[in-house]
Image 1: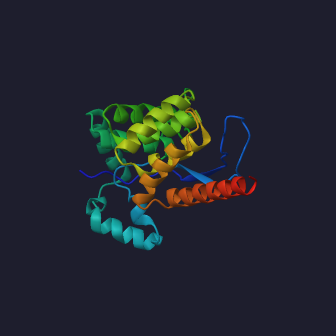
Image 2 (image 1 turned 30 degrees about the vertical axis):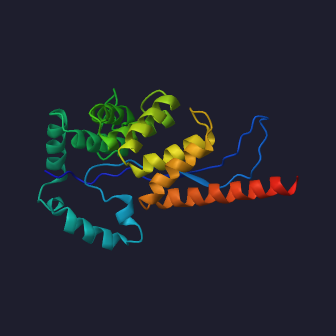
Image 3 (image 1 turned 120 degrees about the vertical axis):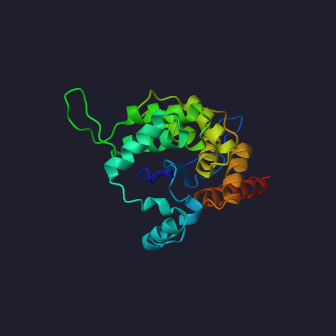
Length: 232
């Protein structure tokens, strides 16, 4: 069974960076660097396939490559089937179920019985189960929660670990995020060379954010070196 397409809202966080030297001084202006805050789930079109397509064109492409989305089931039936597969240990289903709880598509109630807008704690639990099985999407999604401290206690080091595992499996958004993280020195030592390496991996797969980030870093460092050379 192919899973329902579930995608969390994409938020692009603009982050500045600086080239840190041993003196602690900034030697470059701050370019606009994009950190992806978008969950990935089974059944959703990859970012690279959605680029430059209208909503209608995306729907048509989904019908061609994911025909089982038109299975005649009600949303409730799909959810129950998805939960059954998740509870049986299917990592794709666990990751998608986590996305549903995070987005609020899956109904969850608090201790008083009030319906929650979303349930990041339940989402984290399902992402964790998927990540434990080596699921790249689950690792990426759980990393986002650890990075923001939503649904779990904030742990940047753990987020970096999970982003790395996901990125090593080819997840382009995880690769781009690692580029930002190494450029900023968030939870790791600041390492521009490592940042560029991860941006290059994501850019090679056509990730637009990584391409822009890579151009910004290279342009800024070029200007920085030229300025330093002119001062000699």
